[in-house]
Image 1 (cartoon, helix red, strand yellow):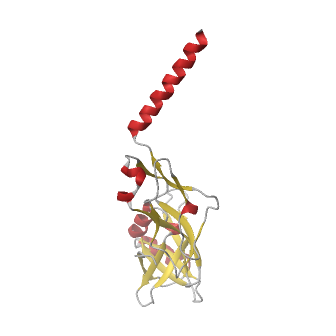
Image 2: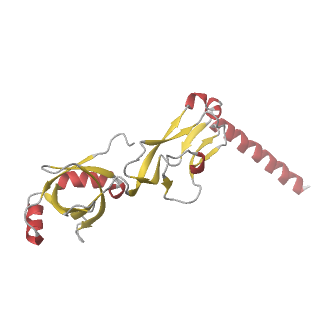
Image 3: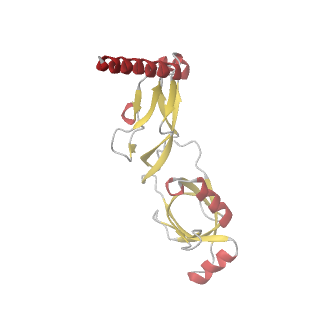
Length: 212
């Protein structure tokens, strides 16, 4: 399970229609609606600055939140839409969807790389090059993994680690269907320089031979 699901704090919005939404914006809030999960839609307000900070952090639409509304039971939600001002590109309304335990959603999951100290490639001076520090997976709301794990203990210089090399949690599937690269063990710069020099020598010999 995920180690920590961030809270998203909101208040119940009194009144309905455009008038109530405009009043919310004048008060420094962004109006929104919470729907789904077998419950009635709930109009809410979220502090403008708090929401803007979340949006600037990135991946707002693929982050699972614990919605906290005074007088209501905490519920897991995911944002399905953020409406923005066409001129200023600032948030004016958002739609949040409640999730059931069996709901399937796409989330970015962090990748941990274990056993650096026993990795043959790193012990020989190689460098771990991380291509994807996070992987987007489709998971159920009740079984969200905290992270994925790559065991480096058997990898040498030149090895490439793909998504199919990682054991995924039961029921989790990558949103990208091809066998994409997660990381690789690059050769040390001294070895790469030596290889480049050797290649240059070979090229020079070929050119000299051609002149004869």
